[in-house]
Image 1 (tube, rainbow, N blue to C red):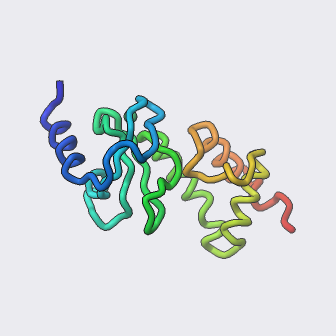
Image 2: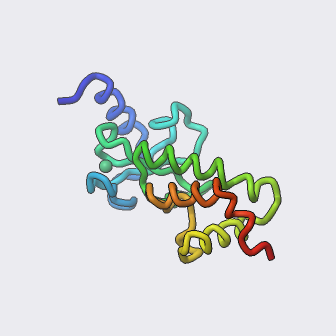
Length: 150
Ligand SMILES: [Zn+2]
């Protein structure tokens, strides 16, 4: 049974579909397909890039935004807990390259090395819970700037 709030959100999703199911990633939590929607569905604002949302939303509160000016998902679909911890990793990690201590590419390369991951997989949008925790630990322990300052 759906309550009023869920009905409202389902309707909001329906009304804001840009591209219907069949193109986007499968939800890793419930196995449903995702649809591409305007950002207003999850952000209360239409100014952000579009979002791939699990069609089981809002029961399954899972989505991922698109890369700027594309319909390509910016990583994997994430539930609330994973979105929250990914934001924490960004808060800890992004200053290293945003403050120009190194390039973004070099920062990700170093993170990959410290996490023992192929560089291609060392992107916060691809991290699961455990990898997010590992990344935060590495940064908090001060290992990030210590390692191989070449
Ligand atoms: Zn789902």
